[in-house]
Image (cartoon, rainbow, N blue to C red):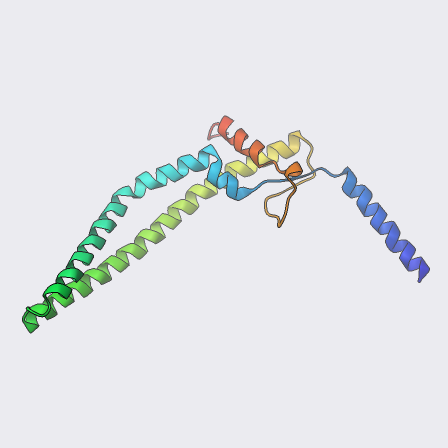
Length: 167
């Protein structure tokens, strides 16, 4: 039993000696996606790309709202057939709006994922370059906790701003 405890203590001491010689870093990918110049440019590009469709969706939503108000306000004075026609028009417009809204969200998410993948690829190349030039043993991109002492996020964001897109 004493021998086993001694071996365990030796393993712990050996592990901590290796850990003491290791250089560890951390990069907050969410901050890179939010604050890095390429990510900000990508977000603006997506907003411009989808602005027209977003305006069309807002106009359609307003049209539906006005139709609903008119139905609620005038349903008592309408004939049965006129009310049914307006209700059918409202239902068709609502269904069309929901379909277009779903397609809009899917297209927007797909474009956002494409742009973020490109930003992530550039960030990963930058992180790897920093790791190699500064002799890091490992750099984490996800962690429950990382000390500010090992946080390289600002350095990566600055390097992405200084680095042209093709590099």
